[in-house]
Length: 215
Image 1 (cartoon, rainbow, N blue to C red):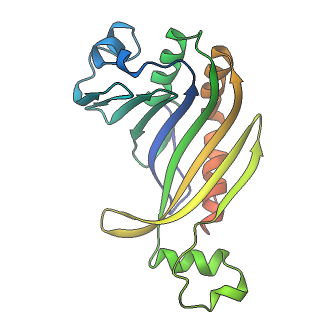
Image 2: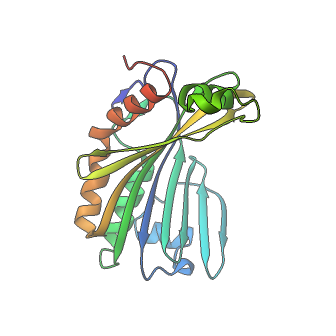
């Protein structure tokens, strides 16, 4: 498995996929069903699981988690700091879509969360992105700027929030590569496969917004 570094000073925390679809039945998607369908390997241990009439979810011991609602499938995983050419959450999503290729797929979001350690992150965001007329207002403790730009056949959205990683204050960059639908199963799987070629450009843009020049 190939790995590449995120820009110096930036840490990769999470990777995820959101698929919006119609005609989903959350009660169908237990861990046993997912294994039986070949969506996840039988070797993955289950850490926790829940199911209701409107929402079901499975968390696996390898940090991958899957939640199915009536109109959305969310598949995510916690990550190390390096970028990789493949991710378990993408493989699971591709397998899911392959098994349910006839569902009407509406949108696809390929997501990641990056972090930069930053003392007083809220104030830093105000000073970097706030208009001059409000920077000097002490009542303004934080802002949450959002940015969007085209990237191939998708739109990349990046939102910045103050947060914490452990006990360290930081700025979180929540990145979303949005593919507008309707989407066929083939197009959806192709978009997922394209993430490996696009993730460094997403990470580099997030780094620039966070004041870190890509290496």
